[in-house]
Amino acid sequence: DKLGYLRILEFEGLSKQKANDALDRIFAGFAGLEGLIVDIRDNPGGTDAMVYLIAGRFADKTRVGHHRRTKKGPEADDFSPVKTKNLEPNGKTQFTKPVALLTNDASFSAADVFAMVMKELPHVRIIGDHTNGIFSNMFEAKLPNGWKYTFSYQRYYSPKMVCFEAKGIPVHEEVLNTKADLKTGIDPVLKAALADLARRTK
Image (tube, rainbow, N blue to C red; front, side):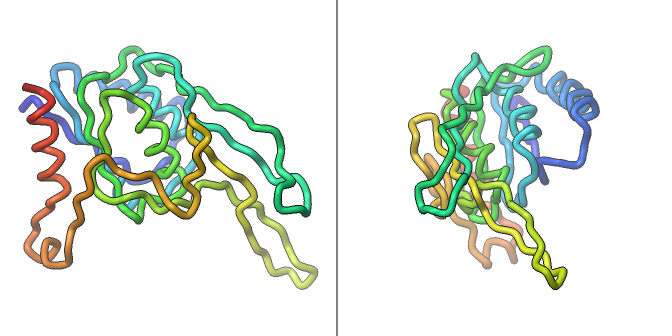
């Protein structure tokens, strides 16, 4: 009864106002909890704006969220100067009690960014498998014959200027689900999160 569970299916689909209204209601319900599981496994991504809107509900203070450089020319190192994005507390209240963030290698794009930002918070531990590691927004262009194509054109960095592109955000505790687990309805990652929160909420 003292632990909560929040499943984030994707980081898009709502306007800023509607998202904040929903988050106000959700986090009001978390007021009496001692710990929270946040599950972004199999999350295909979305927008950085939504990432920071939600992550701000867990922020204890203003911190560096991530750095980013954008491709500006044809040479391998033709990138813009570093642009820094800060994570700031968002909403009426923030949940700063123990959080277990569940990720896997199907946590993509904005889910990568969310994991990177959340990992900087002292009350958050990541459990499961590393995220996929495709951080960049996509540049879209069109060929003369009408075909459209996209390619990544940015580099994302952690606050310590580490690039996790093609690597994904590593976890604090690695736990993998097997096909046998899925068939029997057992979720070892969720069980590990419950055990983690039990230790941290004593």
